[in-house]
Image (cartoon, rainbow, N blue to C red; front, top):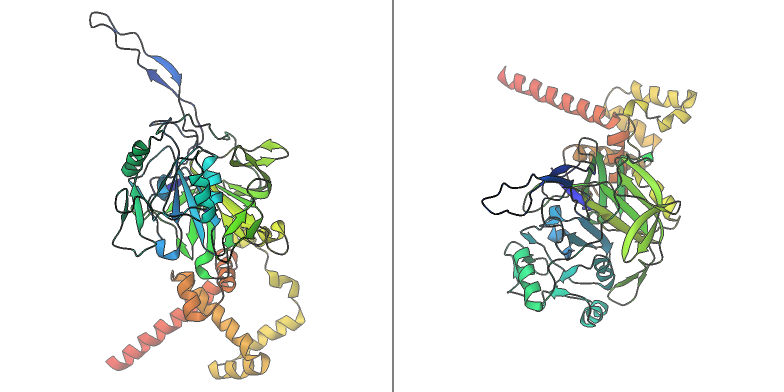
Length: 481
């Protein structure tokens, strides 16, 4: 599997590192002595860790952070290089499309992309880590910030075809890529520092506590491609990420992304021009949620020297050591994601807490899940089900439900069963939406029932399949006879 260091996308590969933050002792060799003398004995020293992952350092801990704007349009997925990022922020750009800011320090991928244009609030997030900022294009506000001086950046507008290359397997504007060798080359050409003393994040050594949550669903809009889901996988001690119904993988390795920390925050969003560009308040702080180890806790988020960090009861909360934390941030309307994973979300009408209550699904064991229909049990419901069981064939079912239900009610039931079949067979949200006409909300509800319900969909579909197979067998035998 490919673990992410910090990806909350909110939020999301190389092999995911899942271990806790540990301290080891290993020998450090003394300075070389003259040949005629015996070398001094090695002495132990504390194991160094990477500042943004909390993992034992196996490389240059003084590598400068590099922040790359990653395209998240459906035509840009899957992306290259996300598996190596330490932190990924996912935040809305224009419309209902998010954009990713991937921060690299402990590992540098061979290439990253597709690279996309800058927005001013992504620059703010990058500056919290004094990162070399890499983009291809810019908004008027971002242009003013970057040209104003004081920020080291590489823009593909000025290096298209040199440092930045267009790949043949995608069309513009989803085809701009850059290698880290060229990022280092660009830094050298512009006199930018390539090393830095990066202040470390805070990491926890205890087990996370909170309410058990198995799945979180985030809808940036009603469209299928704007749906994001995180599912906790206990074997990986992290979260798989799904976007538009498809699992998030790294294009170059074909391995799934796994996230240790998912942080969802609420932030005020405001559209500021006719192009739909936004101003997002990432300074004032607010409420949020932090997912770690299959549990969720309510937090406050604060901007500390440009970094968005989780707090509870006024005290900072450490991240679980790992390859990525995601942060998500949002407006009062809907979510926006950001990876340690950090997601920035806009609150919906009922408020941030109400919205989250509808998107976090507890990992209940099916045998312990109370049926919602239990509260309706009684003589009237018994009569209804007995009447259905008394129907002898399809024709009687047609007649019975024609009298009992409206056409729309019958179609809704049939649609849900078809959605369940397609989900079980691995179809994407987009494919299901196109073929059945079901809304994303309906698809998500059916998926939740498949995961945490009473196995009714599976039971019905299996029996239908068995009957079809039996009919085919009898038909073949009749032909043979």
